[in-house]
Image 1: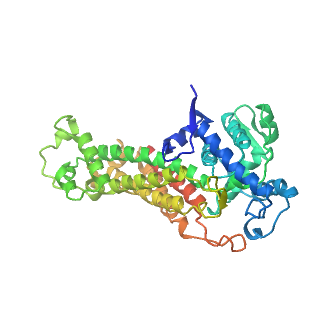
Image 2: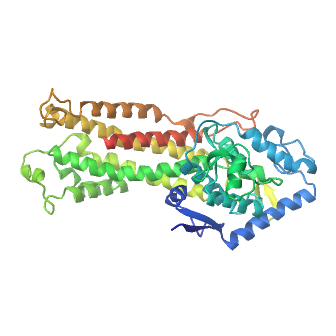
Image 3: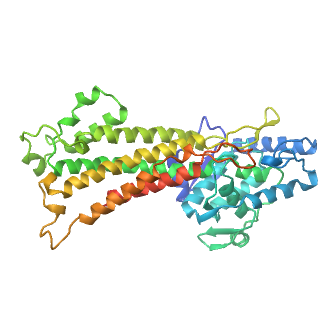
Length: 450
């Protein structure tokens, strides 16, 4: 049964979690605004309407954008200004986001707009929500954002579909012209009011929605990695002495302590003896190779990395990231820089580096399993070696994935290229940070499947 998620503008009271957003992406929920959110959105729109009626010069409402911020637009052209903005900024390239990721992006943009700092009208927001609930998902190329002044290109493609232009997908129609997909679901294209085009495209939602998926998948891998490593240690007849509680109490990093606890739980031969563990219980082995002995230290910091990144991403998905921001209580708009993607960009670069280490140490354990001089096991774990190659090339595949990850782990957020005639002179490159973090995670998942 599809449930309803009540998006609330009071983010300090109700948080949207990374797990929530992933489930929204899977189509498990529909969205409905709370009455409080509706009031807040309407008050925000009232500020915009008063600016227009008073013919005040305000960035993005009665002026052009970026380098054209000093160009004043007459009231008769304000709606055309917003449509032109969406069309000109829909300049992304590459493969389109898969439906799940597009749905996440749309849900997250709704969450931002519902806070009432964007100046979008309640009517337009309700149209966006109806499109989400009907799974009418615009064609959004994955490349084109530099991660500052918002994820402008992908969010513009999102808005382009909502105004009935470009391509759109739904389970009912597949890919078709956006106008016809909306009509097939009884929906009308959005007619943009002043400021609404800008409100739809300013923010870090591309980076952050992909980041939510990355964090959730990374969390699952980290748990699997502990189980796989524990099984490997047992097969290689390693000792469990390195996981003693007192050792880790002397270096009390939270992740390290948790991983050591998991290893003790999985390998406790006193309570759950296995034949392998029993066979070497009283052996004279003192210590093992680092890839076995140091799992709590290596896996531990990966766990701590995931927690750190998850905290940043969770803050980001519950933040308002528009520009200018509309403060209804003050009856004014203020230009700022909440659209800058440096926070999620840096965090996702860090996540890629952390999760890669699970693959790096795992590949070395595969070498130990396959190499008879290290394992005392049959070469490549196969009987009738020569006639059969066993896991020889499975190890090669793991090595290839680890090598690719080393290149992908170069942080994208250390780069910046000035754009928009030097108006946007420092950017985060967060879109690439998010996409390559997901690629690194995918490689680690494939390596674990080996």
